[in-house]
Length: 150
Image 1 (cartoon, rainbow, N blue to C red):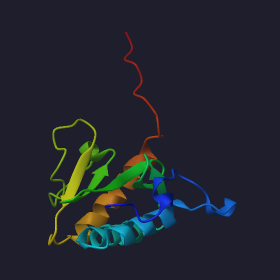
Image 2 (cartoon, helix red, strand yellow; image 1 turned 120 degrees about the vertical axis):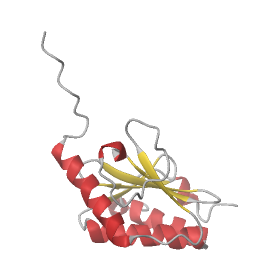
Image 3 (cartoon, helix red, strand yellow; image 1 turned 180 degrees about the horizontal axis):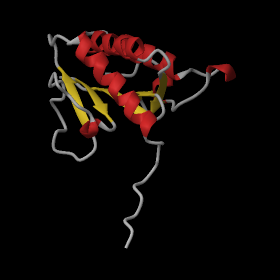
Image 4 (tube, one colour; image 1 turned 90 degrees about the horizontal axis):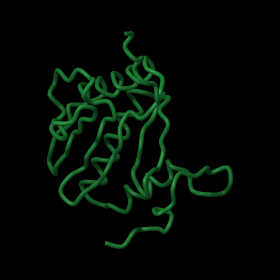
């Protein structure tokens, strides 16, 4: 399928310069999808904003919506059969509702794959978003563990 606009290929930009903002690019992606994937991406985006009203939307890696607050909370990739939300520090998050169902073998990231017809546990999802944002604020972005003393 051809992209809806050439702006979809643009990396992060600012609307103050007359360019397309990351939020506008995400809007365009949702419209471009025009099916259950667009609806799902739109719904999780709204839930992310409800959970963390100060979240910053970015557009990275040639077309991936990213939500940040003191670091990356999650990315929102769309595939033919799924919408994948990858949490940058998902392996460090409690997931009592068992939302993570993909990328479970990694040491850092965890993901949620949504498929057509899946229902979203909205309260559990928003709790996970809040937990990811809180984790980002407790560890400065790019910080490394202190070396062990001899």
